[in-house]
Amino acid sequence: MADDGVGGADASRGSGLQGLADRLAVLGARLVVSSPTDGGTRVRAVIPCA
Image (cartoon, rainbow, N blue to C red; front, top):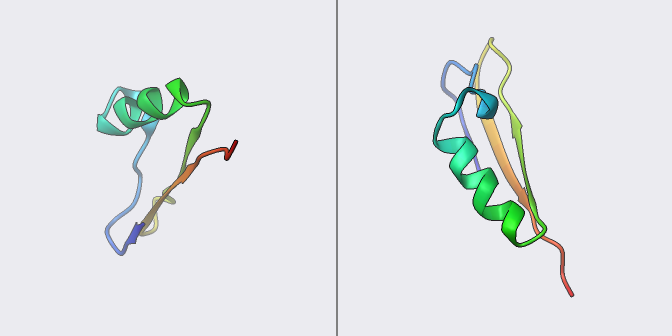
């Protein structure tokens, strides 16, 4: 998922992104966030398949 906003999202600051990352970790998955401060945010969930 991606947007064209201002960017700067940071999952380590205790935002809702951290909650998503915690839930994915239970599944052995991870959340990848790319959010440069010059625009846009891309969020990707990497979920292993058994």
